[in-house]
Image 1 (cartoon, rainbow, N blue to C red):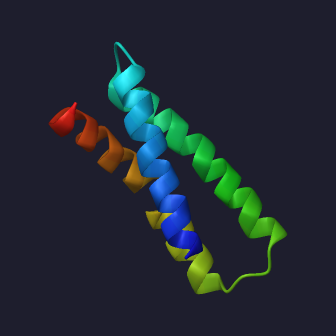
Image 2 (image 1 turned 90 degrees about the vertical axis):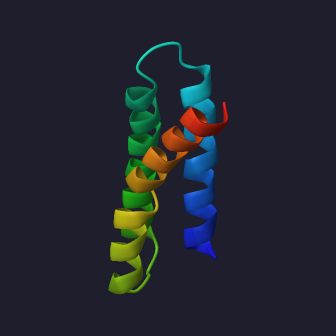
Length: 77
């Protein structure tokens, strides 16, 4: 469930950010995703979670979801 929550937050936030941006939508979406990634790294250091979960969380939940949010913006908005 935490992975789903973080991935959904990243997709929704990046889609909205790319929709609001007038130029460089991908850069804006990846910047927001980088902020989410930074907060995810901080979460990894603060909470005791298994290593496999940390690896999956940090590699799949933030920047790839930012790119997907950008693509959603291109397709639907």
